[in-house]
Each structure stands twice: as structure tokens, then as C-alpha cells.
Length: 119
Image 1 (cartoon, rainbow, N blue to C red):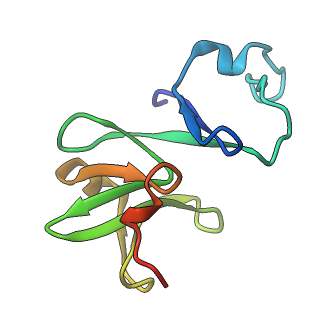
Image 2 (cartoon, rainbow, N blue to C red):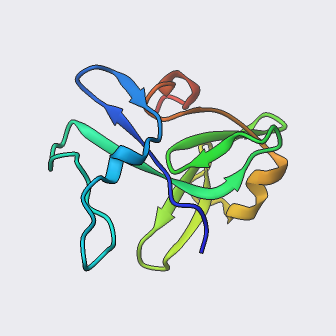
Image 3 (tube, rainbow, N blue to C red):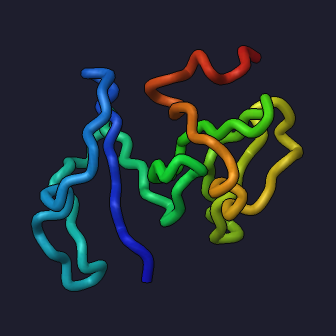
């Protein structure tokens, strides 16, 4: 099993909280984890995908990845149960998440929305 880490975007404060073991301080007998975050729509958890980019930076869902000028968003497909890179330019293009290791994470959709094209 891969490493399980999260970070959290606090919408109201417009800031990211990095991983801390206290994210899950109360163990659940069902999942093994219980978040100390309330069911708050202003807190967005982003899970580590278990891979790093070309600069050894941890990859999370919601990250923006660049490759030779093309930008992608790390997303999750709940129907297929897989992570993938979604093109920021063309919604019909996606590729395997393993491709992140040869690309650079340049930001994320919450802290850096200016990196996304305006539609």
C-alpha cells in the first residue's frame, strides 16, 4: 500500500495546510481513519497520489502539471477508480497518471487558478 497523505485548502482563509499526522487523529474501526476536519464545504481535502513529479515534488489531486507548454490537472475518475491527467486545453485528452513523473507540477487549482485557461 502506498503512502497516505493529504493537504487541505481552506476556502475562507485562501490558504493550504500541508500534511500532518493530526489530520486523522481519531482512528475509525471501519476505515482506519477519522478526520478532525468537520463536514465543512469550506475545507477541501486533496489526497497524495503516491507519485512525485520530475523535481521530486509530491503530486496531489488538483495539481496543475506542465509538459512542454501543455497543462494538465490531476483528477480522479470515481466510475473507473483511476487517477488521470486531464488536459486544461482539451477536455477530450487524458493520459495515465504515471506520466506525472516526467512532468513538472507548477501549482494547483486552488492557489493558482490563473494557470488555468479562461473559458
